[in-house]
Image 1 (cartoon, one colour):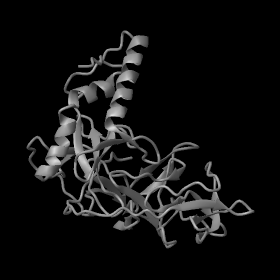
Image 2 (cartoon, helix red, strand yellow):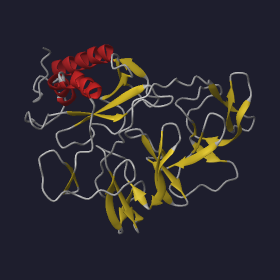
Image 3 (tube, rainbow, N blue to C red):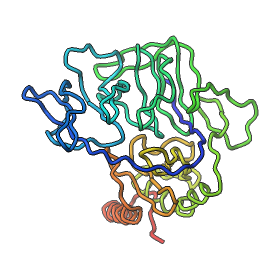
Length: 323
């Protein structure tokens, strides 16, 4: 299966008001799940079989409604899992099946499936890249690998791999990008080929990134403190990039962290940050629901965890020294 990477769209920075529509999941007598508003009005009827630990009355998290399970009486789409609706109850798309559940957002985009093809939607449910490829990876550092004419091959009881087909690389606009013929040193390596660096910033965005770059050494030492092998300073180098900008219902810049090979440190949530639209307040994203934690609180917890680890493992090769 091909290696993956990511992309970013440069858009004007506009102020948006955040939607505050409170919605709640509810369960029918036969344990099917739907969604109501605070007044009890049904937004989406109870018609979904949810297998997660969802309780009656749990709030809907995020900018759309996700039903993480099958729809009663409907045959599931191949390679899809769950259903996504907007907060007015309009069906939007089915997420791509990943790791026994709905695909996660990577750099603000989530894979979806329609008629057997794969595309991408943003956090507001808008389809950004139409479903037209047989497979696509999550975005990583501005690019995603995709293939046409490929298919799944079962490798064991739990895992599958993609075989055959013609592979390419696309940016977050869905455009196919060609590798460069000559390297300048700032490119992104994908499966042995090099592609142009996809990130460009205005002065405000450069200032946001400087906050993280000034703390690069400390953040690097924290991240690598429990790695078993001794790493060089070059191997511990971190890169910080803005992968999502303020938009409707999302008044933040999202900053992701990458290793020296420009691979996401964690495709889920660790070492991912949110910066307020005015650039003054920094949070980290803590869990599946993207709970926001003030950066200072997160940093103190990370430092304590690193120091506790070193007390128990005095021979750890990648030392953290709090300066």
